[in-house]
Length: 78
Image (cartoon, rainbow, N blue to C red; front, side, top):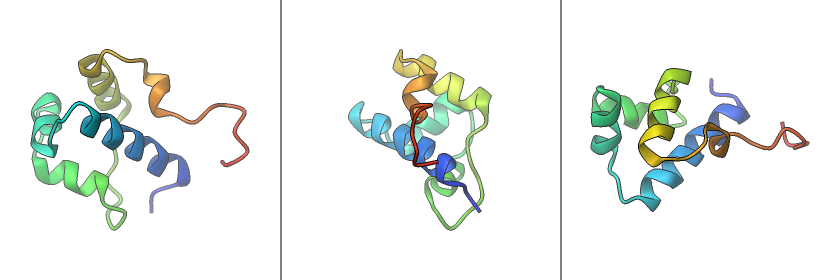
């Protein structure tokens, strides 16, 4: 089961991917994995999630900080 923080990170990556008009296949190409893997990550029905290394590669591609994918440290939500 994915934690609330896992889901937050995954949704932030998904938002950023859509902002840049990049498909699941496009993210898969960046990460050198299958589009099916990205589908599993973005699905709440699978436990699959991004690794820290994969998040780094995504941030590098989008030219943003890794912190953009995480909730603020002072958030009471988590």
